[in-house]
Length: 354
Image (cartoon, helix red, strand yellow):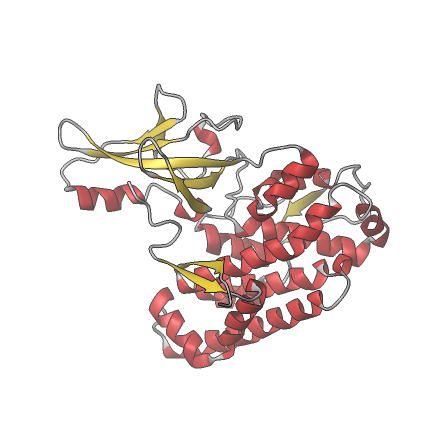
């Protein structure tokens, strides 16, 4: 069963230049009210002319702020870049909220929506630091816009190790410095036709050495699935009285597709594509943008309020990972943002000038 991915369409762009510069150029295009209005109507179902104009105006301001903050971040010292980079992500996350039709809620949710105590006793390991999710704020609106899930996480405490492993663009550095394999599980889908003509979706999770790969509670991507007697295999209930195409559409709704991180190579035995999804039992749905947002929120607070800790971090094993984060994760977030705004998965590949 071939799943389109997080969105129903995808496109690949090849560039011989720095992809971060390309994404910044694309995002700068959102200052065009005409272009932005067209996307809001076509991809997000906006119909009211006044709301389209107001939303396009706000998106133009937010995108311009994000671009300016990124330019500021990369023109200064790396250790101080996390503060403007976080605010760049904050501006982009507000565009998610506007595109989801919740522009007015931003005016009553002006706080970040997350807290971090900079005077709390510093942990010996960066990943043992913790943040607290709040009842209201931009993060709540951003979370609801990306996950389509209700907010039930007020005052929930999260240590950084709950979400850092899911920033896949620093997966190499995470493994290098922490000797832990990031819990990103490959899965494949199969649409099964029963002997009585019904249909069900079967999800297979191969054992690639990750703990808990066979426990359904770790798969937030699945809803309405049950475990089977076979380890790492989960199934929906049978849908009867429908042809295969209609049954497929119904069954697709039992997947939280926003938790598909990417499509990887095919299973050589079955020929079916493999998809990557986070393997986590925390209640928060870790769509790709969420761990990146939270990581930069935390680091921005260290830059602002705790210069002593910032100095200390630069002498720890995590510093190489954090240096990679400032570009790899930002590039990924911008791609995710552009994909969400256009409801199409965008990919960038390097290309030769020749």
